Amino acid sequence: MKKIFQNICIGLLAALINPSFAVDLKVFSGGPFEAAFHELAKDFEASTGNRLVIEYGTSPQRQQKLTENVSGDLMLTATNLMSRPENQAKLVDGTMALLGKGGVGIMVRKGNSVPIMNNPDSFRNVVMQADRLIYNKASTGLYIDQLFKKIGLAEKLESKTERFVNGDDAIQRVIRGSGNEIGFGAIAEIKLNESKGVVLVSSLPDEYQNYTNYSGAVMKTSKHPKETQQLITYLQSDKAKALFKRTGID
Image (cartoon, rainbow, N blue to C red; front, side, top):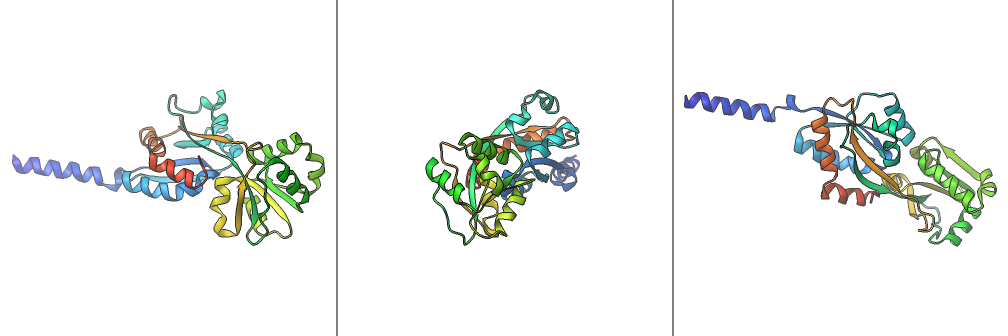
């Protein structure tokens, strides 16, 4: 009897640590979280055995995933997008959690002179003197367009403005640019690319700053809701928050 009991215990232990019991979690994430996930994914996978399959994209691309009701586990994107009634219907009730907020940053290519843009007057002067203004067509770019209109510079700046589909394309354009060019993007995305030839000058002046809140929720199409909720809990931990802050998410 004792031997039988020992064999049962060994079998249960083997089942618990058997990789075949691990699952793949499909994560649809906003681009600003990419730098943090490079480290967090490894830690989460090591501690749970579950593997994260992450697809990054813009808010419009995350919206498309929700609209098409694609199969996935975690949706992590702008809170205001996820809060729309039609999108709430695609998410498991009670699982949405605020994970952080990200601001807009100013960038130049490495080696270019770094402008001082710490107040509204210096910001206006620098953008007026720039050869090119570069940003995306997603949420960050839409906000910059609105800001230029608000401060009365939209018409004056339009001829030297270049817009790209996503933040990564805008950053790559800044890196391979020339002359006195300035770019705008999510601070976290700029930080992610600093080793590739772009420099984060600063955030927008406080008077002009715009923060995007980001939340995560379990998708109703999830095949692994329990494990996905475990991931959300992990992303709310002090360790995750510290890494978010270091990579540009407050």
